[in-house]
Each structure stands twice: as structure tokens, then as C-alpha cells.
Length: 68
Image 1 (cartoon, rainbow, N blue to C red):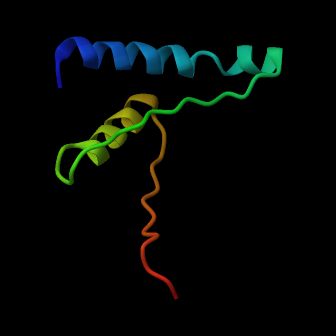
Image 2: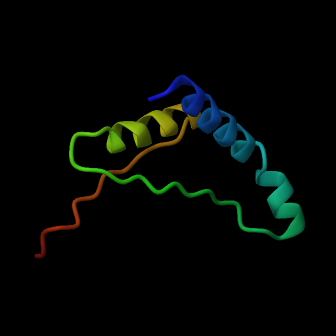
């Protein structure tokens, strides 16, 4: 990933993580979304893991393709 893009994402994540109280104060939902796309093996899951690590969040990987 380009260094500039990486820094933009980190800045956005930091701003998001610091906004929980503000969102609660104004009655706005505290959420942030990213759309990752690409073929298998291009780093989408790794990106999610890195973002979660940066925010100190847990990640749960659910397999939803099988039925029981």
C-alpha cells in the first residue's frame, strides 16, 4: 500500500476512535465503514486485521458459506 494512503487511513481511524463521545452527545450513530474489494490474496483480510490492531479491537471471522 502507498505510504500516503496508509497515513490517510490511519488518520481517519484515529479521528473515528476519538469521536465516540461526540457522536453520543449529538445523537449520531458512532460507526465507520470501509469497502474493500479485489480478488483473493490481495490483502483485504490483512487490512482488516491491521485496522483492528491499530484500534485495539477484536476481529471475529465467521464462515457463512455453509448451511447446517
